[in-house]
Image (cartoon, rainbow, N blue to C red):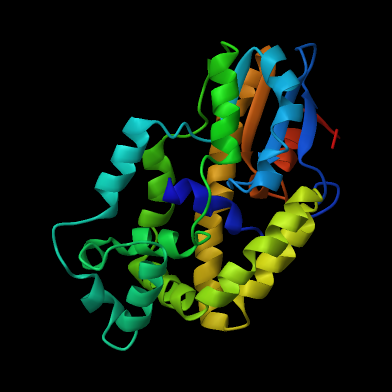
Length: 284
């Protein structure tokens, strides 16, 4: 799913120690059995998928598996239905000056020119944030498959509409500014995929954030839009993640896997869990 795979590319500007390194964390709360959190990369690159097998032991031993989202057929269909409208008005919204570039970049992602004008602006933005020709399945999907195969209870942290709303409910001016900028700097965004993957493989979430900050650039107006984007995509969703994780962590035996960007920073999931009385210990 396009939206789901876009999420890890948007990271907070300044994650703070001790949560700027580490992908796998042990979470304890009171006398409840131990739980674990893992920060994924929504990618299907072979090097990323190689990280799945070492996690199977944790999944198999868990009481409940909590992925960020279950991208089943219903979720995919809901996303696709929400992504387009009946009106061919995206070129008008983007403007004559910028549409040729936006259209060209959408085509690189396989979006048919007959469909492009009907894309909702948020869906076009999400599309341009994806790696061109990204491999499937993603690490997240592989982990969900393992949980199903091992008979674990699966409790998604979010549903697809909540993920859509994180971007679709942003101000129109913010979505359009980021869409036009993403088309303009498309090559730089694509070039950032490999360094981000390398940083994730090294467990360096701080470097992930620094790469993304450099990609945003120094334009003050654009940074204001980016801040709104980040708050909706991370800050507000992190609060929801913790709200839904905590009751299960109190019972113990949770294995949760979601985008690594949600782990870091003063408003990240780990910091919020710490404030809620949990103990957080890095494993890897």
